[in-house]
Length: 224
Image (tube, rainbow, N blue to C red; front, top):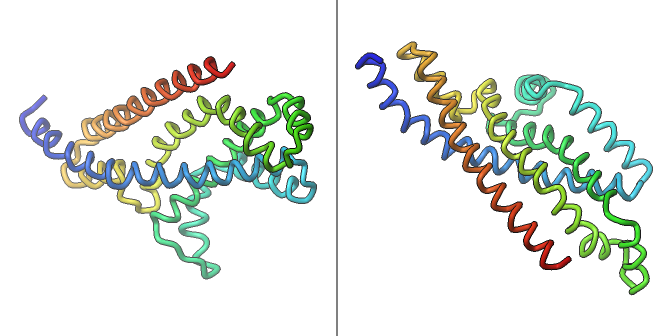
């Protein structure tokens, strides 16, 4: 490694790390919060078999899962202004990333909801609980505990997918790497450096996921 290249990497690392902390992480957290909220609503509607709304949810899942994330970003950021809907790049990325991931997470949550024994519902009705209370206090906690590993994986995947936001000018980690590369033209080294930063954050999230799973398993064992 030449002295020039080493100097570029040393100088660029804190800049990319800064954008990772101040833009990439907030983008991930906000998008995931939106995704989990939408996924819960969509999954519960399908679990309750609300006729018209269930069909709308199925259509949403079909369209979202059947079209590329990049195309969705372009439609929202570059396409919607043609019909008078203009959004800044960051909120547009949050909405698209959140709604995209929600379509996948909704199916995960729906599957875990349906995996809870019907006897749990019947027992709730026997003690006088309403359907919403049974769902909130009995079914949903068990379903979310089962769904935790898959939902954690979705969050890790979303962290990596935030790099797509660079295509609509969001100045996140990968976009910053592109900007620096445009000035010094060292694509291999700079993009590997960016990949290392993504790897560091994903490793931390994976570690937190394992800790969370252990806590949930110990909690489940204590209440078995």
